Image (tube, rainbow, N blue to C red):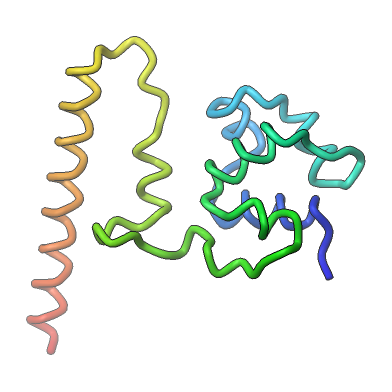
Length: 126
């Protein structure tokens, strides 16, 4: 059975995040994160929740009480892959609520356009 640290590292890597990127998004020092991943120390409950949300896995999975079937390779009912949603949560510091909403709409439209192009391309090949 894997350790908490191993599951934290696995979840981070599945999201394609470096420790520095986790720091940028959560303000958890990358050296602290490294200690968590090497089982040198354990995160407190709040930190565990933050990492669980960022990595899109359950706290039960991180604690070894559940499978990792909730990981980032899945899509929610809206069809947007979890990895894309994580990218959409990029730092929007300095943008007004209206600007953030505009950005989200633009990205959603772009995603839909690319998805349709990919599907058209697939249909032409079949």
